[in-house]
Length: 242
Ligand code: IPE
Ligand code: IPE
Ligand code: MG
Image 1 (spheres, protein in one colour):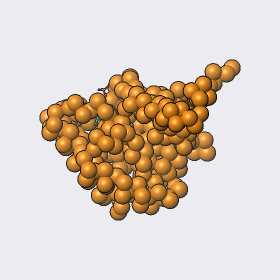
Image 2 (cartoon, rainbow, N blue to C red):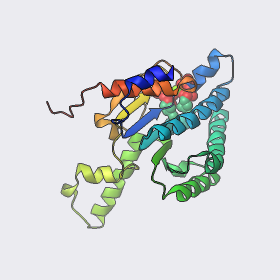
Image 3 (tube, rainbow, N blue to C red):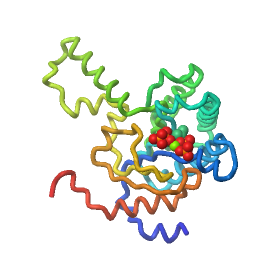
């Protein structure tokens, strides 16, 4: 199956940055009469597989949406189950993760428990000099909150007299985002059938190509990723030009 999809992809022109909204765990579980948490367990396993696969084919930046600022409003037991999975991932990443992958956690870190913050910081520090692939895990992430965070940094510089408000540029605001030193995502993938952005990378997505599918995240396979890349490679990105 994967061989067919592979044939359609030009591996010399891969998107540099792929972002994935890992959606549909709950529906995957419901269809099987399982609790939502079982869907999250399978979703987390699949996340590991897709990260490995992206590294293997040579993707430079991979951003995955793991937990949104709005997801805090879910029932406490579901939030706990998700945080436990993340914590487990952070523990196992030292052994499991390819040793060329640099991990960055993007989002409102203060919202996480002190134990989780400690684990996040330790893994980021441990992987900081790796140059193979950047893996951004969007955790307690909201794009509007990210833009507010960036705006505050610029406002402080104005307040301190370092520059004038009129001197603010798009580049400056971009640099203040969590992904300030990274290229924008070329391709944003959303499984689960939803056709919305759900507060994900609103600024960075200005010229991203979108790919949707009804496949639920735990069932999303490397061949789906290749389908998305193949479709992306067939698109004409004009960036407003002709
Ligand atoms: C994605 O799956 C995981 C998170 C949002 C944390 P969902 O839990 O949103 O699954 P559905 O959308 O209810 O199927
Ligand atoms: C988006 O999925 C967030 C993640 C996948 C982490 P949601 O399930 O929270 O999005 P909505 O509520 O369907 O828009
Ligand atoms: Mg969902």
